[in-house]
Image 1 (tube, rainbow, N blue to C red):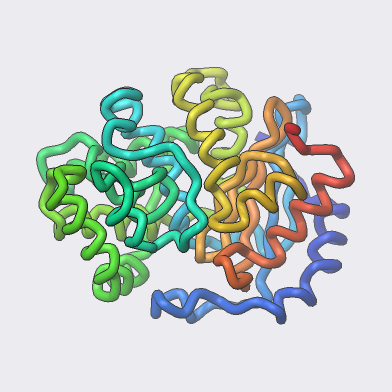
Image 2 (image 1 turned 90 degrees about the horizontal axis):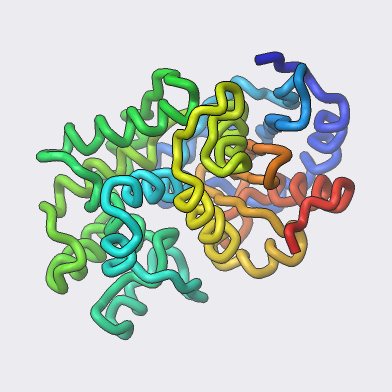
Length: 312
């Protein structure tokens, strides 16, 4: 796989870097505070080229934790484990205007189901579905699956971030116990939190993220070998959730201004998918008030306007 620097991406990064001053890094996870808020990197995996398939700019080797980006990947695995009916009997499909960690909709919705798999309650329910007899087996399957999206590359997680989240995630525990009371979750809550915090602490760089985006851009096929990693129907479902719920409470605005499937995480990562053309990975940890990378959003807006990315 040929990778090379891209002058256009470098120019865009230089253009948007000043706006990082308007954002701030996630402060509710202590281990995420120790990052450079001005850091920016971006990569594009091109499906329409035979050579130079990866282009990148910025500090592209900088690793970061996936955080909520992991939600869409683990959803794909849960759907492969159990199928459509099982998963969506416990988790809904509708967007929500509430914060991603809100509990209010669980109390007011029918059957106490989380509204979708991209909010914390829904993601916790999805992670609880992963097959395995204990936390280690479940974690092993998640780790192996995400490695398969990167052509078997060994994937690690940031133990400090995972520990930091595990120790400060009492709201997620509350969401989990509420859902267990209503039989949405059937596993041990502490075991679930252990797996979930490791899942969120998975590490990769923007090149890795772009390659995963390319898998979804090819409807679940490996962009280099053509092998099927995710069934096309599962890839379609995941991309649909990325459009409707992937950018927190800014998903509607993002659909209008950019118009592609995307998923963000509070570490500053964004996974983007341009169907049949590109996988995109961006990292910049300064966040806006809704938890999205402020520079990352601007990069995608610029690229979408120049190259007419929108699916609408």
